[in-house]
Amino acid sequence: MSVARLPAESNNPKPKRAKVEIRPVLGFSDEDKIKTIQPHNDALVVTLMIGGYDVKRVLMDQGSIVEDMYPDLYKGLRLKPEDLTTYNSPLISFEGKTVIPKGLTRLPIQTCSEMVEVNFIVVDAYSPYTVIMARPWLHALEAISSSLH
Image 1 (cartoon, rainbow, N blue to C red):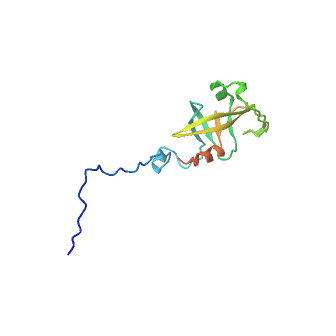
Image 2 (cartoon, one colour):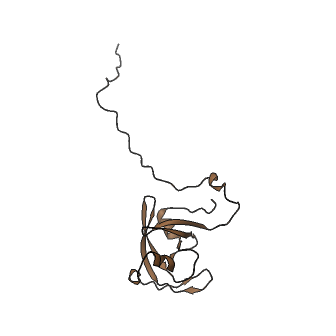
Image 3 (cartoon, rainbow, N blue to C red):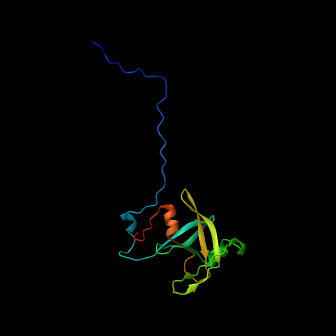
């Protein structure tokens, strides 16, 4: 009759566990709706780190196809005319007017651990926002914006 024996414990340390990368997730739950008046159709306005600065009044607009930057932020970031490259396509403003852009500039946006370079079209027009972030940036981050919360 044979007896199965368990291997003797060795002096080897415990096996190493695989490192699990925990990535921060920006998400929302029903608890986030507690202090909001429902239903609502408010715009999604956030703060982003653009070019190394916290930039407030950033509108998330899934209906737009270009990222727009307005003069107050352009001046606030201390950008100069030589920081612009030519951009000749006219845009349509919120009022339905044709706007000729001043040019295009490329700046990094930091979101958690992700750094994404974004092309901003600089427009000399009034806006209550400093920047409008559009679909290309959301797609680059593989993100979905939610105005519900």
